[in-house]
Image 1 (cartoon, rainbow, N blue to C red):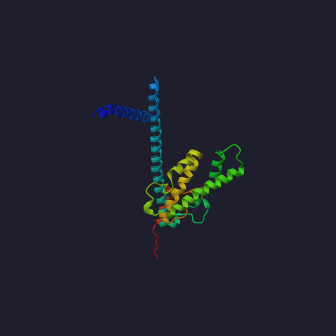
Image 2 (image 1 turned 90 degrees about the horizontal axis):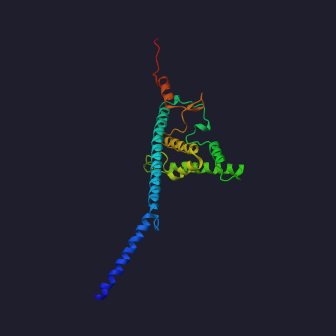
Amino acid sequence: MDHDQEAVPEVEKAVIVEQNADERRGYVITLQGDDEEAVPEVEKRVIIEEDVAGRRSYLITLEDKLDQEQEKLLLASCSLVKIYPSLDDDEYAGIERSMGWMDFQKFYHNCLSHKESEEETEEETLARAHQLRNLWIGKMTSAYDVPEEERGDVPFKPYNVDDLEAVKETFGEDLYRTIRKAFREVRVAFKTGVDYKPWNRGEGREATLNELLDALPKVARPPTHRRR
């Protein structure tokens, strides 16, 4: 009994030591002497990091919603062209009309303005641009192999979201949006079977939904029969 009573203080000491260790791990800092002012700085840093993470998450969510709306507009345009083929300028089949096409020059210019080192040569920049473009073409092609039910509602699935965010951080918004647009077009092409974007040949660009709707009465008008 006497032996047990002597052991109790040692147990209490061990518990206190363990509790102190937990507190130090919780603050991620060991306070020494009067270094109590360090705690608010740690808390401020945590709050700032959480705020930045929250803003980043909000921006990604907002971009997803905008991308979904743009996808709906393209889907509507392609559906109209499929019903009324005469709405489309089918005489022009330039490569830039292809759904999911990504201009190599965008990759090249972005790689040129974001060189890996000052010593990077022209050939190395070109090779890096080709490699980056081929990487995303491969990801886009693999999207066709994913069953419809596994794609979800996010416009840029099924590839890894972090991969695209890395493009934005490394090369900027322009290339980031080029890739997102290409994936959006591929998804619409898969859904509608339309391989070419509706085109405004006069202005050399993709036709807008409003332009197609403006032209719709002319092609959808029932034929008139003259009286004999």
